[in-house]
Image (cartoon, rainbow, N blue to C red):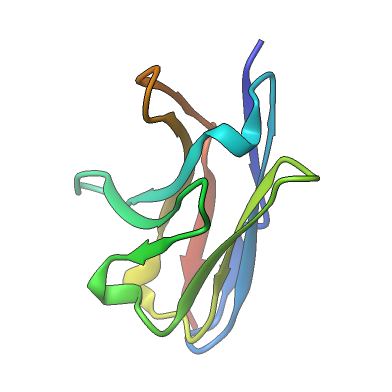
Length: 117
């Protein structure tokens, strides 16, 4: 059984930081590209950050220079370090594991991030 479990969300003031974690089980983690998505109320889910099996990273423009995605293959965990948070970063954040060859994709349950004073 595949499980992706996110943690680390919460309420933070503008300018603050949070680190999200996503622990995976039931997959060969180092063979999956890992993504962080987010979905704000009334908006479509958007891709925020990606880290490939070769540790290449990519970010949506709105978070470049503020967010950092990383992975620990020994711990089967992907992280999203979020700094200089803005109210527009408020959303439910989801991790996704995607196998590029098998075309399998798995989702976590999401963790709420609220940026507000």
